[in-house]
Image (cartoon, rainbow, N blue to C red; front, side, top):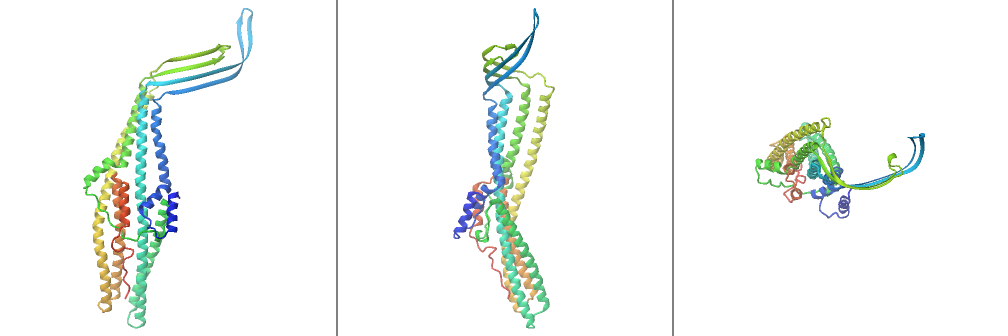
Length: 455
């Protein structure tokens, strides 16, 4: 756990009066804890070095070489007296300092451009990973909130049905109820308990996921209790969202960067056909550096031009260029494929937001109507106009409506932020909008909705 995450935990532990854990706090903890994001930070730092690597091809190079050796040789040479053998036991020495500056090297210029493109790609990749971390944090955070709400609703449903079962038992013992009504309630209670077991399991798994992402131990008291509100969608049509995605999507930016790198590789391979010209200067000191310079010492200073002209390499340069051209074409197809994928994702998210806004209105009315139906059915049951089955069905509908409403509320928030991410419009301000929506003071919370007691 990072120091920021540890500080948050200590604050909550020592100061219960502090506000509940917000989405922004969870995201801040994820920034310092998530291993995948830490890896992305290092990849970003490594990617920025491509600039220096590309620039290095155009800068002067300075090299120093030094050699020292002990030699023993036997030299035979012809003379007027026949073959003469000489034993040599000597030391040799050489040292050279060479400075070279490229004057014309097309491949080096292309390498510099490729280095800049790779560095820009690393920045886009980091931006995409940062935005993905934001949506992952929201999904984990709302998963915990939804898991808590589901567990509470299931607990309240079990409590209501247990109270109704007690009522049925009392009526049977008094000779006013039927065993059938008691069995109906027992059956619904068993289903409610099974739902509660599943809700508790999902709640634990959701907490574990958020803990893995942020390093924070989330308890029920550290979560906001208010009803999430739905932040409005920006006043843009679907084609306008498409336009924003084409221009700002980091995923498409990555593919465009790959295409630029592929185009640069084509030029770099083509540079294999171009000559290279460089200016060099060197100084060299030698002493008995070879058999022919035995016993001789040289101090040599040189300055000049060096021209390298490729003539023939077996067709390797042409083959490498054709390979680079094919890879550039593949990058163009991948860009087109990714563009369609991003636009499809934007359309899906946009439709989900539109549908969820309508569903929120309908489900809110359904939840209110279901609550009123439970109250009316209870009164009718007391008056003998309705039976136990009617009350059970009314309670089931009310429970289902409250649960569906909670699910749609959190689903809308995820779709809203996901739409901004896919369109390339996800910023800190948008994340703050969702965080404020989650802690806004709305009407009655789904988790705290009034649960009717059994008559």
